[in-house]
Image 1 (spheres, rainbow, N blue to C red):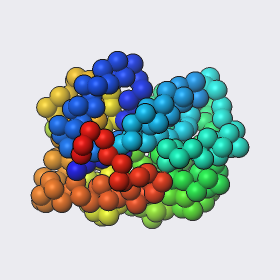
Image 2: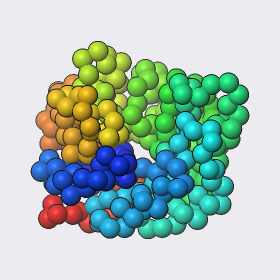
Image 3: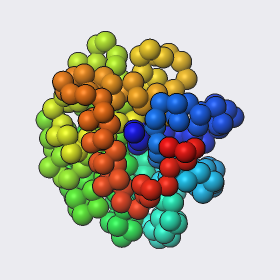
Length: 263
C-alpha cells in the first residue's frame, strides 16, 4: 500500500482521463492520494474530487508563483478547512524562480497560510524553490512548528532538510529522485528519518523514470518509492508501510479506513 501525498488530479490532463488514472492507482496498489489546492477558482474542483472518492483528500491554498492570484483571507482559509475532506493548508510557500523583485506580497501570502494552519490545526503543504532560507525563516517567525507540515517535492540540501525536520516538518520525495543526476535529492532521501518521510508524484509533472518526459499520474508514486527503498537498502514493502503510516499521522483528518476500488 502506498499514498501519493501530493498530486493535482483536477488539472485538465488528468481529470479528462480520471477513470483510467484511478485504475492505474489500483493496479499499483496506491490506495490514497492528496489532491492539492493551488488557487481559489479551482478549489471547488479539488473539493469535488475528494467528496466523490473516499480515497482522495484535499487541501486548500494559493500557490506562491502567481502575483495576480485571488488572495484568501486567514478567515476564509480556516472556514474552508472545516470541511471533513480538507486535511491540510496549501500549497503555499515561496518561489524565487518564477517570481522576482519586491516579493512582499508573496511573503504575506505565506504568512497568512501559516496563521490559518495554526488556527485550523492542520498541517501545511510547503513549496520552496530557490528560497529555502526565507522559507525556513518565515516558518520559524510564524511558529509553524505548532501545526507542522511537509516540505513537498524536496530538492534542497541535507542541512536544509535538517532545519525543516527540527521544525517538526516531514520531507516528501518526488520522481526527481529517479533522475540520474539528482545526487542531492538522493542524498536527502537516504538520510531522512524513516518516520518523517513521504513520497509523492506532483503529477501531472515530474514523471519518474521509466516515464520521465511523459505525463505523470498518482500510480507512478510506486516508482518513486522503489527508488527511495533502493537508496535506503530496504524492502519496498517496508518503505511503503512507513510512508503510508507517516501520511496518516501527519494528515490526521484523513480517514485511513476508506479506500476505493476494493483496496
